Length: 333
Image (cartoon, rainbow, N blue to C red; front, side, top):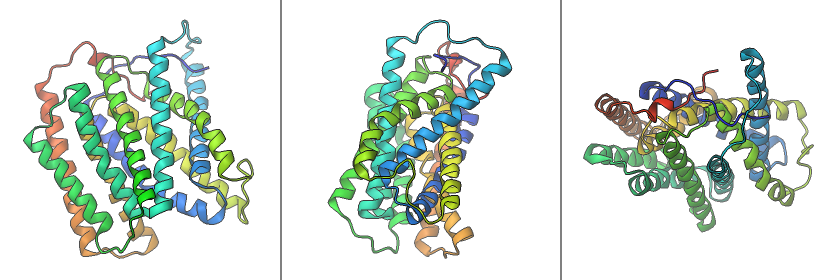
């Protein structure tokens, strides 16, 4: 049984940024793993997203149960308030939309176009949402950093490629960006109000609830979800285990922990480090060569992330810690 909440000491903005960077690097490996899964099995985007979320939920439930036994904490005393349930369900739907629509966009229009539209539209939607709903100001420097990050991402992903743009794929990528923006804004808003749950609990609820709308969609996508057809079951199980543990359970716990203490627009741009880590994997492990466009895009992207990191640190020093912020939770057991 999941705990309704668990408040622990606040996470610093610096550590939150570190968590986000690790999560982004882990997410950068998910694409390569997913491509290999597609090659050795019949799983499609919805089926893979369902396996990812269900597996991540089961793994986190085991960790939470072990933590409860170690600390000797009893089961929840009171049911979660309605507002907490509403937030859990909303975040779960947004996350399921984000992941599934992105996998579908990549399948429909290719990795380059699907990635640049999703990760390019995401920061714009988040910045607008943060201004409208959270009252956050980006400032001239922040706006320049966002523009630099988007430029770097476009150069990194599209530079030197001849990817074709398919309207359906672009639409799916925009849907994915909306899901990503909603997840970030809701998480940040909950953290600012002091109502955010422990990051591990939040992630487990998100994955668990997010599997429900994916079940019928996965059934429609194709047969054999429980035992997908494959000529190499050992390799498939190893790949699925990696997807569940590293870019899912670990990465999302770190993401939810960091997102509540870092400004929403900064979260959006820092997470753009994902395609940089993917490019590094391609060079170091797959034998691909860096082009001039890849180098230029990487430099622009890293420069923008560094600029926003410094701005976040200065903002944290100027802003006093409020009572609500002191209740922000971390992923530490």
